[in-house]
Length: 329
Image (tube, rainbow, N blue to C red):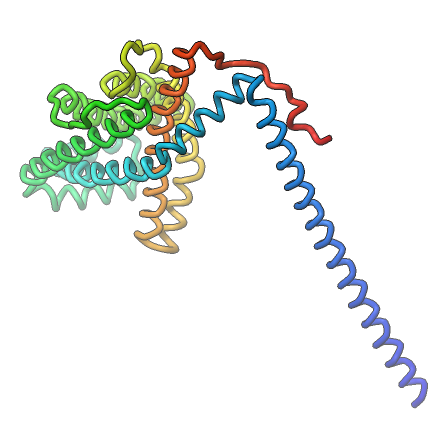
């Protein structure tokens, strides 16, 4: 009996020692993680101080700080949200036009061949067939309502973009959206984007390596289209169109990156969130996508204005950065 008690005590002591060792090991891991976090914070603070100290002697760092300060001064994040809201208001009537178009295709029995040429999935083809059957009767009314609402949405979007450019450039031009040429160009740009999307889908489905080719086509097209928009938007007196190229290139690169993220991440995310959260999940992803577009437009105006301001002051823009600023001491 005594031997059994001694055995039980030994086992209990072994369990206690194991628990103690586990707690000590867990505590040491937490402590090491905490030490790494503190070291990372200290390093980041040191790098920030070095970069701030190197700002007067490094034009590229000074340019980056000025662009950040200009964007913060005009509340770039809030402006991007306003642009995203205007883009959302534009998408709704464009969907009506799309529904009317599907109705016309269904009435002419061309929806099936068009879907096959664009390489659409069977599920999407069935959905389009159902929508087309329902929209075939009221397609003219749907088309007229969608077109009229699209023009109104484009007017508000143009006005918002003019406000953004006025703030970024520091100009005082009236943020009117009633100029016929701007409204016509706005409608033309939206139509061009829609044709671009349809053409991209056809190119992807009917050409070898279409997925890679279309990424470069989208980036180049976005650069040219946004350069045209920038020319029509307010900017500093005497600034040539070449001063607007940096912002157009930024839009092109960011559009290409957003396209890649959409293909490789957002598409799957939308499918998963639609299954989990329903329409709410799709709306969240769509709003995030629209906000990124708005941020891209605001950043383009800030970049052009900031670089032109430095150029007019005779300040250098590009320079070599000493990588030792970012190394651990």
